Each structure stands twice: as structure tokens, then as C-alpha cells.
Amino acid sequence: MFGRYPQKGRHIKKMDTDPAQSPSGATAGAPASGSGSADERLFVLLRTRGHWRPLELALIALSTSGNWGLFWMALALVLWLAGSGHGLALVLLMALFVYATLIINYGIKVMLGRERPLYSQPELKPLVGVPSSKSFPSSHAAMSFAAASVLTFFFPPFFWLFYLVALVMSWSRVYVGVHRPSDVLAGMIVGLAGGGVAALLLGIFASS
Image (cartoon, rainbow, N blue to C red):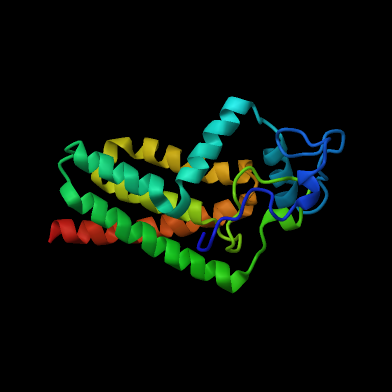
């Protein structure tokens, strides 16, 4: 997540000039190999199936909006300005827990050093810019589930909606080709852990 976002397909020069490439990033007539771990096979399946163009554009937009947690910060700001009744506290607490989760998640990335899927599946061109950070766990997933936990504390009846959006945001990272499913699952766990800490601290503060 930290670091610049190179141009799409920057590391896959062969794909940029291959006239047989399909719109979804796989080479026509030469499906990506499903060999390897179940994680890799599931990545290939999700990256090459269900790429109806309107859905593809929607998930690219959603995935991109999650960079640096901007989607969740924007949502908190909209709720504040719409008079949600929770005031600036919602925005400040969202920023605190989302970015604390991002920093912790980045530390795990650095320690584990797992490369992005494009290194093991170079024939599948990512649909968005590829972050320069490592792959495991997914920062988008971690921030999304931490954010959903914060929103659930303030708006409990809508918990299902917040976690549904977090799940779609997380899944979109596999769909656009920058994370494996296990990256996303690990990020979800990090985010839920961060969200659990947030809920505990907010509960203690609210009862004091």
C-alpha cells in the first residue's frame, strides 16, 4: 500500500505489445495456467472469469477509491456533513483506526516480503496500477474491515451493509489482479483485529 503506484502493466512489457491480448488481460487462445497452489489457481479463476465490462469498470473504480483508505474517509466525512449526530468524532476515530491498521499491516508486509501475483502470473496484466509494497496481507482488506468496525460502533443497525462493502472492496483486489485470495483473507483478519480493538476502546470510552 505504501509507495507509488506504477502504471498498469509496467512490469509486463510483453503484454503491452501482444496483439492477441484479450480485454480482461489474459492472452487470447492461451489461458493462464492454473498450476501451482490452490491460492494461485483461485487467483487465476477470479482474475479471468466474470469480467463483464460494466462490472469490471465498477470494481476498478471501487478498488482505486480504496487507496490509502480514501473511500472510508470520504464516507465518514459525508456522514458528518449530513448531520449524522456523531460529529467530528466519527471522522477522527475513522482516521485513527484506519491508518493505525494500515501502519501495522505494512509492517507485516515488510516482514513477510511476499511478492505480488504478477511475478508468478505475468501473463495476467493487472487492471490497476500495482503498488510498490509487498502483497501479504492486503492493506485494502485490512483498512476496509477496520473501517467497517468503526462504522458499526456508530451505526449498529447497518453493520451488514458496512461489512458487505468491505468484503466487496477486498475481493476487488483479486479481481483486478493485484492480490491473491490469501492476501485478502489475511488482510481481513488484520482489519477485524484492529476493529475489535477499536470497538473495545470505544466501548470503554463511551461507558466512562
